[in-house]
Length: 415
Image (cartoon, rainbow, N blue to C red):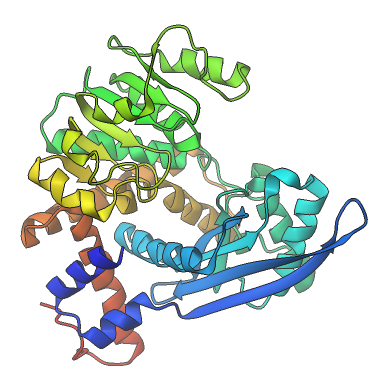
């Protein structure tokens, strides 16, 4: 991320001092707390909350429950949230949180105790106009509901807008579950149009069949694209004639959330899925799956990054040389944070939107962001990835100038 940030910042003419300021978090908090486990033992936990920026609005970002959570990771993800919100024009800054724990080894009661203790420790940090958490790795609607309830108890009234990603009956938004995958599909269709590739029958491979990959595949299938390959952590499947995605989803749900054993596709090596001749490759699983090691062998015309950070910085130059269009994660998977903003807005206004309204507004925001990114890429003669950083950094730098009460910040070339 640092290399990409610096390239964009240099094109904008930012001073070294402003570059450093925009990369450093505004606030980083480490909390320690203990809970009583189901077996009666007391156990201590360490948690983090990084507020990267509030220049464009309340900070926004998920909370991870994972044994591998560490401070540097949370800091990097908080910054990434700042740039993602800025690119889409959502009035949020960036934040991220985490608790060092393995949720797979904890009971529901223990997870609730952890969530409530973490909320108590950060009750002065969270708030609808201050810092708005959301689900992330290891967390979901249950944890967000507990956080909202504990925060509300501490403040003596129900405050739904303190968190997003809640269950519908707790103030969640229609369309939120599928929002990231829907956003990936919207961006994919726009990218195909940009490259003048016919949509009907365009070939797609989706790496990862979790929430993002599943919904991306489904929405694109419904638009007439041919999904020729999908994978989950256990297996990669290929059918040159296309996979019936609704049928595969039914199989997946009946097979313990696994596509292993699906009979109407051939098993291929995971690595081979990334190298298939395709119109679109959607890496929607994990970070750094496209690197300098395999980038030269990629045969897709377009890569749409459904996951966070699936392409390493050393692969960018190779893909550019091969004239493969890469739509970066900051834009491609922004559907989730966009609909999270809609949830926060509905809670703040004490209103509820129809799923049709949610999806229409999501489409409008992503189309506008896509157009701006590609116009900026053309203007500066850079890749869409660098263009996203140019747009985001410019917005945050301008907000910093306004906060300083200076019409023209000498550290920022606004031309």
